[in-house]
Length: 153
Image (cartoon, rainbow, N blue to C red; front, side, top):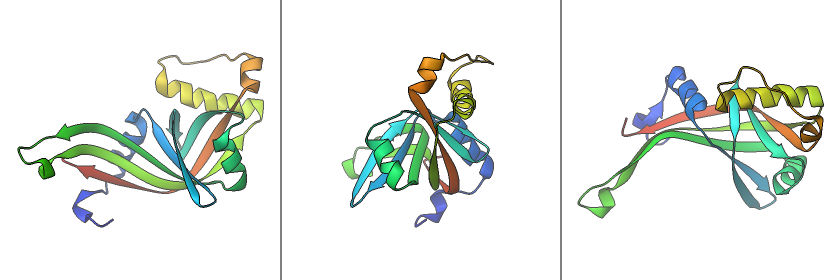
């Protein structure tokens, strides 16, 4: 990281960002074209779980190249100034890399969906209709590395 003073070195702060972020953006490589998509997600045991339809551009790309880059942020706030070039943002963020694996077995999908649902819901258990389960997949991203960065905090 170029700006070492902005690096987040405390693993607990990085974990907090994973837990508090609402959206995970994943970047994929489609030949020479990058593809970026925001997704609902959950983080558990150094792994990201993403909910997806069973087909589409993201799935097509992952079937050829499962390397992903991901980004999350929390506590974003615009910082203004009387001088336009002094404007900026406050934020806490994580950028990382990993390998994506498509989970299509119903039992494993349910487990992944439970992890995702638990993040966004106060419910303790969930039931899924078999037809709905057949229309989705869960993408499991095994994290290889993640770096935290902060500005204004």
